[in-house]
Image 1 (cartoon, rainbow, N blue to C red):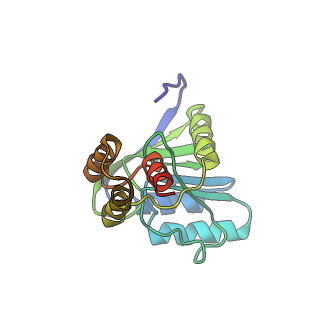
Image 2 (image 1 turned 90 degrees about the vertical axis):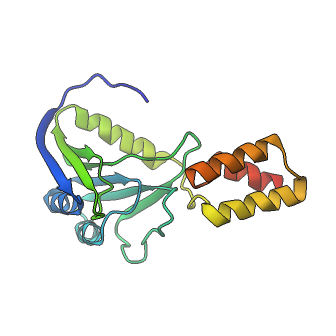
Length: 196
């Protein structure tokens, strides 16, 4: 993680349960861009409003979610939203922010209405360009399929073990994927190469 020396002004702080209402409110306010980065898909209302805004063609509407999420990208239901599932070999994409024109909303929310207590802060000023830059970096990452989890991850490991036998590498991968709940991009690629 890199520190950025910049300034920004806190314009609003949202505290409470669910942040879907915050994200959907700001879709309506967007005039130039609405770029949402999240670990999982936002709530249906936010997606509906993003689609409506994108369909009009005046706002650049984008969505980046992590390859860790098992949810299918709803590209058929929302054909006008530019969507991307990103994978990284450096760890999980766990960003949670929205760049809306010259503001950024960030905090603990996944931008859905799951009943968890969240904090969201709206910032303005030079800090926004850094969040926009981070979003563009995420956008440039390779598109990833959902990462294998649970029984699918175990099944791939089992196939490799059946073909090649146990190794220190496989033991480590099995333990780590069990603990975190999924295989990383690098682990999955290495296991798939081992099957060839």
